[in-house]
Image (cartoon, rainbow, N blue to C red):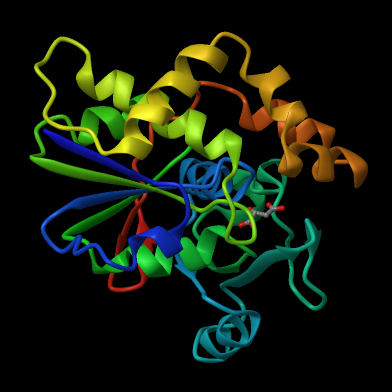
Length: 237
Ligand code: MLT
C-alpha cells in the first residue's frame, strides 16, 4: 500500500489523486463533528466551500428537514442552526436530518479531496473504523485540513496514527516525506492526545472561547464505529 500525507490541501495541487482513496482529517473539529453527526443518525451532510455556498445549497432543500451548521473563529455562523461542537450533534438534534456544513478549514479540505476515487472522513473518534475500511487499498492519501492553510499538529498526529494502523501486520509500501514525519509525531504524542491538543493553536483557540470540552471529546480514540464517505458532494455513512 502506497501511503502519502499532505499537511494542507494546498500541498495537493501538483498531485493526481484520482486513483487514490483520500482520507480527510480535521480533528479540531470538522471531521470529529462529521463522525459524531453520522453516528447520531444524520441522513446526509453537504460540505460547503463557503458560507454563501452553504446558504445557496440550503435554499434548494426542505427547510423543515434542514440544519445549517458551521463556524467562523470557532463560533456558530450567524443565522445558522448549529455551530461546530461535536457535543451539539446529538440523535435528538440531527437524527434523520439533512445537514449543510461550512467551516474554515475542514469542509474546504473535503471539497478539495473530492476528486479522489473514494473520499472518507477521519478523526481520532473513528480512526479504527476508517483504517479497517481502507485496509485492502493500493494507494491512500491522507489530507490534513490544517489551520488557515498552515500545518496543524493534531491533524498530523492523527494521520501518523492512521499510518501505524495501516502498516500493522503488513508490509507497507513507500511513504512520502510528510507521511514519514507524521509517523514520528504519532509515536511522540499518541500516549496523551488530550495533552497534545491543549498545546496546539486550534486547541488553545477553542479553550479561549470556552470550548475545552470539545478538545477533550475530540481526543477520544475509536469511540465511533462510522466511516463517513463523500460522494457527489454528499457525505453519508
Ligand atoms: C475548521 O474546519 O476550521 C475547524 O473545524 C474549525 C473549528 O471547529 O473551530
